[in-house]
Image (cartoon, rainbow, N blue to C red; front, side, top):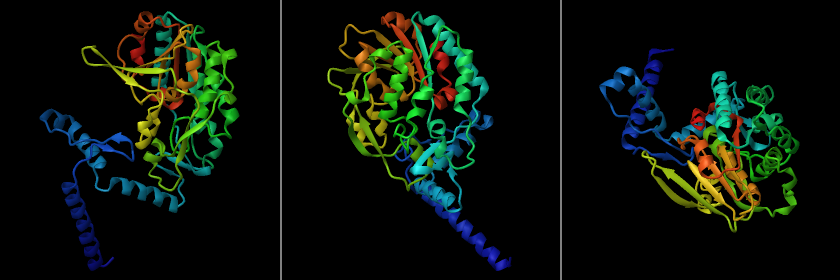
Length: 382
């Protein structure tokens, strides 16, 4: 390489850095990424303690990455470049058959899985009501045939077997989730651009849950419902993280009417004071936003209470992740009340809540990826 060419490259690189630094200084920080559907890191406060511990530099690196000028465009460009050179993965997302994006599922932390199984067992011991437990297999398992050839993915069924084997016989298992979903894998039971199951997938999940709850003879056939498409412009979380911009959006459907159903969300402040907020079974205002999946029950909440008007039916508590948001509508004909606790935000005693609210049955239901990464399940043991 000649000295002139080396000098040219050096000047070009420095000029690029200068442009990016200037752009970064002139571009206002964003608080939220609509494309990625998540809050973005803000400039960290500098202190002697954070500087000595190394936290400041780590937080600042995250801040610079999140606030990088044109971040969304650069992320998309990286995904296009990966595809052009023949790669079939970007940011932990596989480019799969039928324009499907599937998050890679890696071997989980064995200690966390064992601890979470232990917490479920401890919850069941304190609950005072029958407890049912289920893990929902996701696209990486059910749609494994869509993955690129040779794409590594850890077997989710192995995780379920390990967890189920660690639970006491007093807990009823939703084993049929592992047949109900694969049996219908050729149907649209998952979104192509999101990690959740669709309403159709949630219906098949409902049939498995009802069987485990001892209510299998009450299951309503799919023909009972009329499918209504509420959006054909849904791009979910996997789309956001992948950088991929060349796939078509998903459709979102609902099946269950919401007449006669009320939803209330309870918010707890640091002192334990409760504020109640009305929600809806389907909050269609979210269909105008990026986070369309939050249409179901209005999205994240510490505690949600769904009342159906079926006074002669039992009360159900679900310790859950967001998969239950689209499952709950199918459960409404069979319960008088459905109480939903998300341990990420609810830090009070779940067993005391059961006693205080006359709960008849409890269900712990998570997708496999969420269960093996959740650091908050310890709260259900209180």
